[in-house]
Image (cartoon, rainbow, N blue to C red; front, side, top):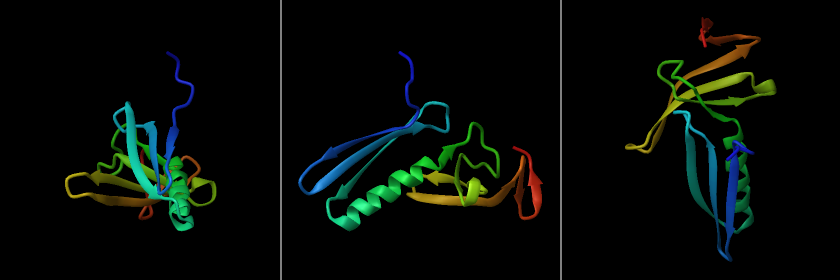
Length: 116
């Protein structure tokens, strides 16, 4: 079977809840699946929208690059800024390991160039 879309989401809409599952490329080269439930009030739907938007800029790293980070979030103009992090599922925490700036083909963290 051919892969048509590498990122997708499914929504199961009910009267009081919306259950959303996203499937995105995972950090191990496979797929990462995540499911969340949101309410149907306006603020809940705005939170759903924010979550879907944030997952678009969240990228699994092909190999741990910076301080053992397995994930990166890109943001800012032209996705110039990068946050490198790992997820501690046991403690239910996101651990930020480094924040950097991409300038051309260079990644700068704390003023030092980091090889990707």
